[in-house]
Length: 384
Ligand SMILES: [Zn+2]
Image 1 (cartoon, helix red, strand yellow):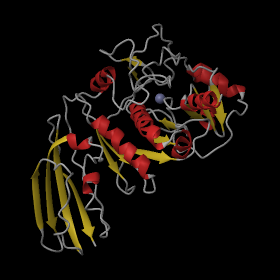
Image 2: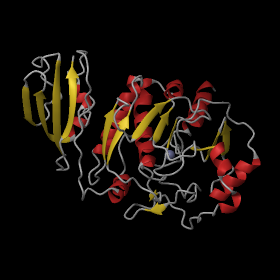
Image 3: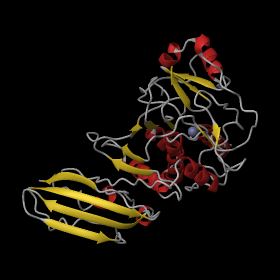
């Protein structure tokens, strides 16, 4: 009996995982399952959402498992102006994209300092999987310095309503009613559901899934599970299979699926992503993920911070075939050049030679295994 209860609880909570989808800096809130006012149900219905699965959590409405809207945003919608989207007439599990896609292919993800190490490593691993997709020109980088430009932000905070993570679609209003570029993860809640061993693959797969929404992928099974086109649109992606149970982007979470802990994209996923963001234009942007620092070991760990920041789990080290590094001292004369493959244990700056109390110009460029040569990334840093 105990086993059954635990399993049911797990399945229930986990059902929210591969849902995700809309929202931003949500304030920690509130008790789920509040009474839902009819004006929100009417608006959601007119927007094309299933109103049989709606929850209210504080200032937000969650529908279809994990699409989240601010009530204040729904209040701004005038009923007479809502045009009902088309309903799919062909319920399949075929990949589809939103009407709006990303307009850039080099994406810097900001992970604020204080992000739990486990989550940091998971994000690194997940974006590594994205960087390795053959045939796609999407390149992801991590920064933990919020002072420099970034495109997406990973926010670790409570979500409520049993949701584990949510993400935005490109160009569409998020939970605050403005276009958002955030993935929100409720790491503390996830930690209560899974031990570390289970959490690793499930959270990686979940992050791979959320990143898919951020680039404009709908749930692969969107029409099969009755999501409809909704306000974002759903455009079938040529070449993808009519059913793809192995897809990372399925919205229906089945804890008994053989793919539940698989940290790989399906062949259909790869076709879909390569179709939306083809490698025919490499446009690989060099990026120096280093900051001015005291002698706190950061330079020793540069293999984590250079693009693509690779994690020890043998993933990113296979992403690059070559790295070129040029370091020039500005206040104290110093020159260092490296041009070659990434060593087995990762590239490490020769900081034992680098004088402190100096300012350096660091340049890096990379050749990835897809044959793309990046532009030079450059940054001036101080080594105190
Ligand atoms: Zn989702």
